[in-house]
Length: 354
Image 1: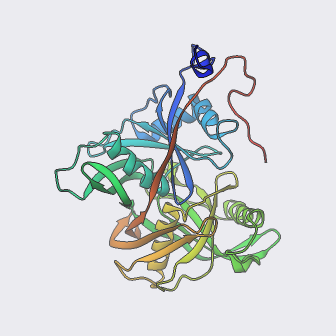
Image 2: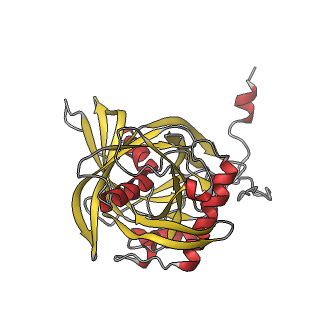
Image 3: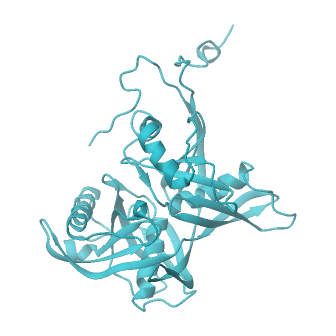
């Protein structure tokens, strides 16, 4: 007698729509859904052109994977694409509830493990304890270093960022409901506004998530309205991704400093935020609060998970004094899935509740 699973498998599916196969991971609690198969080819001569193409022609893939009923409003994803850079092992487009970001540190930590375990990079020589994975993100080429044993990933991953720099410090912004608020803006592959939660009447370690989201979103909208973001390399990178509320402890200490990032459409990062750590390290270095190769720990106010970061060398980005930042953290696998689409499903492209 056949089992029920054998009778019903595979589930009904639109034959004209490829099933979307994914591997799910998380870094510090922040999810990453990596597309293995089912996404149509993303075309374009450059990675930024591919990002524009996907936004214009394949956005249903993002919605199906990020939105309910297959995802949720705080899901995060990655589509692997061919890179035009000869040194890159893979290119990646990042997906979230609003669209497509330029950088994602927690995703790079997970993709480093994934690339090694799934054969996207050469197996390191016998005895090697670390494998290098060059990942082409929309912001540029990022090098991940994956701890390994017998050619498989194990332990933490670290990555070296694109040049990170400070765009503005002590910027006075009029935030509705909060009055004049002092904000710093820094870039770590994406632009973030930084503000001490205390200035908004919140304790970052005990505040309700809804209050954090409302306050951070108010800052983001105020900065967007009152300050022009620019990047020396590309207009595609010149946008404010979100706001990071901190505990205000920017001066060096061996104790972790806590922050929470709210980005895209009120999406809350469960991790300490890899690109946010990058930008925050650049900000602390710019203010003379950190020396080169001085490691700081950053704790997520959402989950308590910890990433570390340090500025490893000075560089330039256009006219900006910048630093390359090393971020370290742990990624874990959580499962695999194959998502079906039925042609008569009115909600096949997903929905979000707010």
